[in-house]
Image 1: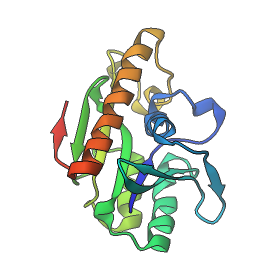
Image 2: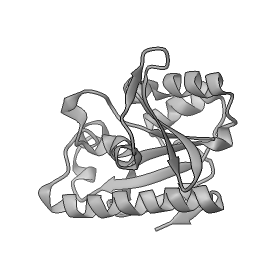
Image 3: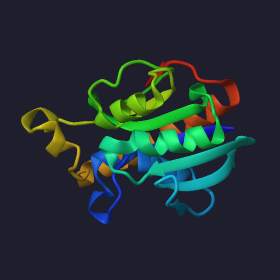
Length: 181
């Protein structure tokens, strides 16, 4: 079984923001409804993708505390961290860019920092989805990531979501490989 974690913030006001790309991707991957688990502080969807048993989770602890929900869920299922895949936004990558890595540093992403801290390791696969545009360098990153995508960016966002889903499906079939698109 694999666990795929989408990072984002709960609440309607964050739904279409750059920081919620992880949630957006998992929403498209889910083929059944989400169920909220108070015990795990997460929305959970059990599904099968490419013949693989997969648990999708969206922590509801807000970005900076995402690791708490991840640790609780991973610990309960006793899943090794290489089977815990994290999908998240990356302000250092241009919109349209996706990087898949088997591990590494958090790159300053507070949600990933939380997951690393709560799991006690950097050794888990990540699907980093670029959200950067020309405005990213003109405002504090905390403000930029909470902005909604411009109308012009929505078409590209849909393409990026679909490309990420294809990479996730390919990784489930063939295993994680470091990729940059």
